[in-house]
Length: 274
Length: 324
Ligand SMILES: Cc1ncc(C[n+]2csc(CCOP(=O)(O)OP(=O)(O)O)c2C)c(N)n1
Ligand SMILES: [Mg+2]
Image (cartoon, rainbow over the protein chains, first blue to last red):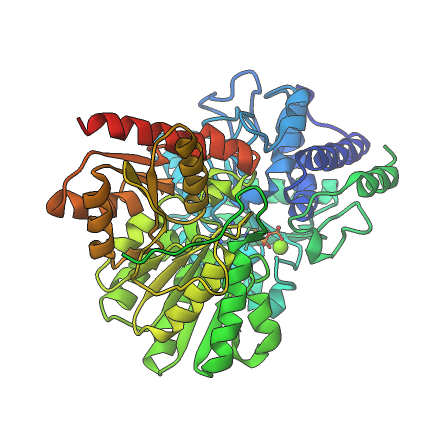
């Protein structure tokens, strides 16, 4: 696998990954474009320039772990995993079809590279914290990442996990909030306000880094700040745009869980220069 | 036993999702009773509670993605005399907030109504995490809880309206996809009363939800082979209509239960637990056999998981053999 891409390479990569997400959702005829497109830059940076991992050995004990708590964004994860070589790119077109290894929500028993099954929101950070605790117990150097949605933060379990990670000073744990401001019913602040967000995490004894969730260099820098922060877990509040990269999907909650049709796919791909 | 002639042409049936019936029933009930409140959990349109929200915005309370909190808020509302309807996907409603349902709602017999959407494998491509296959089991085992699994959209509307009239916790299960409308406005729906939708003598199929339709198709096919099968719409899983079910077992001497749910602990279990103690007859169960769901087209999944009329017909033949 190619490591340490340049900014230009990464930008090109994220564009290709967006194309791949849209195509697989079109083929599937259902699924979640909005939250996949908002999270893809974070995942691309992690898998290409931040995490130690080996697509030929998904179970490598020393690997860094990525837990996708907002499981509905799995098209983004599948696109990245296929691109890294965990399974063939060809598999993507069978997303959500009967018998395919790519389930509508991630399933670790079916899909190489998926660290844990998800789809019921609010559970990922606890799992990531447990995994980070295990690394501490075993004196392992691997790091644990967990991507959450901003609507997902309404789940109480997230804050129970946040308390645990702060309490045990899990500096090998890095949470990322995909802060796109939208959930299904509309704006997060209208449905159930989660702000002030930075202060909440700080009050739970976390180190907080805020950054542009679509700027690959800034993201890389945020991850390195997380890495160097000792005796506290870090959360990166990634300011993102739901549906990023496709004008008619951007900031539009109706693209949370609807696949593009043929014409919509064509205009989306045209925008992405594909 | 109440016998209802559905006057059906099985080849020409209107299709409608049961979640639509729930949404309509909730609005209709709320029109009659100003104490009815609906709670939302960020999937408001998907579970058709947007119809209530648009009609009665001041009686809609959005909670966000917080199912356990949602149940507690409902409990508090009910203590003040409100009739809260908590609606969510069945997996999260029955699963995520089970302890709140058990210890807060059921233990105190609070007047909280639960609308469980996305019941069954027919949820389709979203896959196992979203396909509710265990709610009937984990709801019916709770003291004070009532459980309704209506057969179609019209019956779901009636069930939602009936739930509002009953004091205490009621769980109504409904689905995502369009399913055949087998009942009509005139079909009598009475909470707690099963009814016979096809008479027969060789075996009885006791079904709920969309499986009532599948059972009618199976019975029709079996009739062509000279096998006479009774079909019961057992929409109320709890409390069971023991009288009707015992009569069906006595008249036919063999029973097949059919549900789009785990066979373990579901509607069929409830029926067979009761029959085993009162009128033991040979029995077979159609349901999901101890496995998680998967992504796929709803129709394909129903076949792959053995939940279609041909599976029911095969079970009927087996159970008739067991009679001897
Ligand atoms: C426990 C649970 N409740 C409800 C849902 C249904 N659901 C899926 S995605 C979603 C909205 C998520 O919003 P957010 O976390 O902001 O995700 P994003 O905007 O990144 O897509 C909801 C309510 C679920 N998957 N799990
Ligand atoms: Mg969001």
